[in-house]
Length: 132
Length: 506
Image 1 (cartoon, chains in turn purple, green):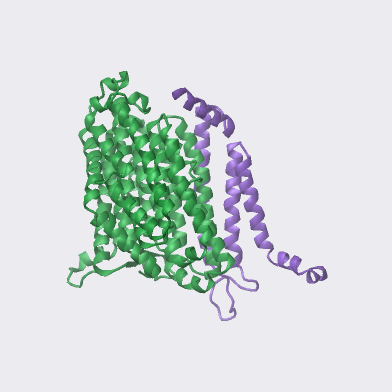
Image 2: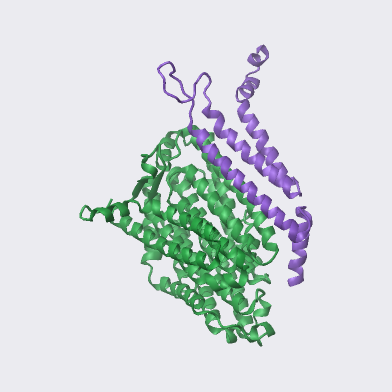
């Protein structure tokens, strides 16, 4: 703790560790989407990217020392339940998107015999050229 | 909201219109997917898609008569509950979406039967209604998170619609759109999350109030940046448009016409909502450089895809690139930040939906009759399919912006807006981009009328009467709105006045 107190910048970083987790997940997810040619890996990256946003919503809803929002005279500080509800919806949306994406990949594999985006896009370009 | 003189049951129904507009297509989609039958699915979607414009028109009339409608979803009062809020701007958009859906579905059955295998037709109609539900939900809701949910509902349905195209490239187009679209939606929800964190509310009206003292904070600006980029991906603002050309080129004809005339338009509306209602026009005015960058992108969007369109071999892809260019005009109008410009943007949104809907449906007729998708094969079509090509040319003239067509009216407002803003080079850019449209529309006209019929075009199947009728209704509207501008420019002008003047409160 002494180390943190003598370096204010370090302290700021440490205090907002939840934000750093979000940023790390987000950029790794985006990197995977951009860099990977394998479609399944791209979808994994996409899911990681979405997950980072779930954390962004959830972490401010947690208040240290607060209880779940069930009213009782013994407790005065409650956590915000709204982010949890929102993210429950977002998770459902994310699952649906992932399922849709995987279904498309199955169909692409049937039609092209590959799930490498580079190879598939090559075939698409060749078909485009053949038509011109 | 209704007059007290109404009898009790009618009054109750009239109060529930905003919810019905979303619930009816959603239930329709469920019924259609349970029926799993093309003909029955068509019947359900025909009924649903003609009920929607009635509801939307009733709401527009109600808004005109007695101001914005606020509807508390499930009886939970805003700002805590989800509010459906209808004012001039989105009532107008809802009318546009629902009428385009109704016309597209009327056009659909035989075109779908020729493009989609029998076992998938029921699903097609279910997805179409789900897409309609999502788009109308996005337009009507006044809740930032609800916008995201409806955006994903409409997008997921769109990916499925696109993937149903006959060509195997449709699958790749749908997959690429899925990845890019999801990133866009996630960016949007990230921006909305930042706004939620600093304001503690998701209701757009409430958010606009609470954001006022926080406008200078970095979180507020980062939120706007994330939302703009996310929506920019969804509305295919150049250079974020890469998903669009293939998606439009390989989707089934009717799906292309519907998506081209509604999906990107709703995204534009969401952007307008945030820039004008939630943040207020002052924010965009204060950040001159950022606004200038968006204007520059809009100009590039008008010019570069138009040039690309001239060299396309596939007629649907040519029109898709043209769509990217037209989005440029709309965004240009929106970010001129004056009333004439915004009127032009919103009016072009409306006119372009009709024009592009007509063009894609005309192509749908051609695909149905001859199977032609390449411009070279269209040689002589002007003689063998004069009615379809006639509608194509009328809408093409509207796309160019010839006086007497709908496109001219909105471009006139855009030029007026650019002049008011003192940006003369933009006037030149608008005119130059319109000249480029002459080339790509002219190319089709030249091939279709001044060449000997190609073997494919020599003996077309006759076009069914409902397909021709819908195409010609839209072609006639292109001309009608060139002269009669009460709806296509009057309502946008009123909406622009409200958006610039009073924020979300109207």
